[in-house]
Each structure stands twice: as C-alpha cells, then as structure tokens.
Amino acid sequence: MPDIFDEVEEDLRAEKARKLAQRWGGLAAGVVLVAIAATAGVQGWRWYQAREASAAAETYLNLHRATELQGADLAAAGNGFAALAREAPSGYQTLARLRAAALKAETGDLPGALVLWEQVATDTGADPLYRDLATLMTVSHALDTGDPAQLAARIAPLTVEGNPWRSSAREAQALVALRRGETAEARRILEALAADTAAPAGLRERAQRVAAGLRS
Image 1: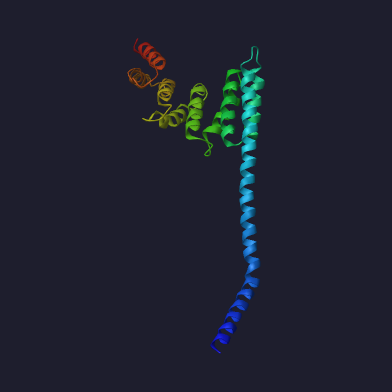
Image 2: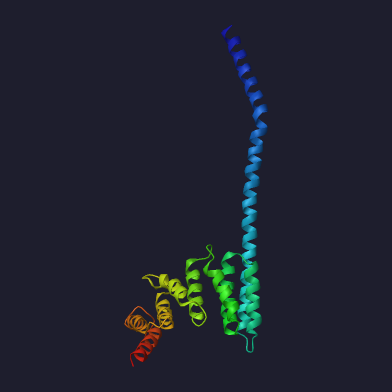
C-alpha cells in the first residue's frame, strides 16, 4: 500500500509540474526571444556604427589626400569636410569640423571658420582636447573682431597647468591683453612664457621677441 500512495503522489507532482510548464512556458520562451532580439539589436547597431565609421574614415582620408595635391582646391576641400561633419559619427564629425574650419580660415572664409570652431567648442559630446583647441582657435582668430573681455574670459581656463594647449593659450592671452590696452600685463605674460622651459622653443623665442619690443 505505501508504494501505491508514493506512486500516486509522484503522479500528482508530475501533473502539477506539467500544468506549471504549460502556464509559464510561453512566458519563459517569450523572455528568451526578447533576450535574443535585444542581443541581435545591439550587435546590429554595433555593425551599423562600425560601417558608418569606416565610411567616414575613408571619406576623411580621401579629402585629406586631395588637399595635398599640387594646385588643390582648398575651398572645395573645406566644403567637403564641412559636408562630412554634418553626416559623420561624433568622432569624425569633430575632426571634420576642425579640418573644415582650418581650410576655411586659410582660404579667406574666416566667418565660416569661426562658426565651425564654435560648434566644436560648445559640443559637450566632443573630446575636451578638441573643444579646448577650438576655443583657442576661435580666440586667436577673433582678436580683431571679438569682444576683448569675452576673449579674455574664454582663453583663461586654457592657461592653467596641465592643459595641453597652455603655452599657445598664454600667447593668445597676451595678445588679448594688448588688444585691451594692457601692455604691462601682456609683457608680463610673454616674459613668463619665454622663461618656461616646458613651452615649445619656437613659441618661447617669439614670446621673447615680442616682450622685448614692448619694453622699447
């Protein structure tokens, strides 16, 4: 008799398990399908991003090569980089904007260059290194047209210890001081820059010459 009861109890447990499987099996399968779909979606997105980055890299390289040809149309190349910046993934977008701005400045389109530098400088998604470079370029090229007080405020954060653009930023800071009529302050900055062994040699020599001119 005990064996019979044990068999009945096992049958009841099996039936209960079967009903639970029927009730929740569909949900479990659905969860698995969702997980598979999510994984496939992530992989698909990564593939798309890689493809877009590869295409942007090829376009960037082709445009760069075009600028190195004898008699290259630099204005057209600048427009090409600007067009790439509107379509490329974020990393290449920043590089393309900087390259387009440099070419526009070189070919006389300073307003267009300033717009592109400003876009990089204010892009919170861009690498801080490039944002600071764009700010430096903006200040350096807006010395004749920009508000001196605003230029001074923008360049000051780049002159702190540890900033990769510190030396060039200090030179720009001195030029802004001259624009504001602060000759003594400009000379002080330039003399300190000329004595800074961490600054590039060419920049130190230029700072020394300008500082000497301000003393005479």
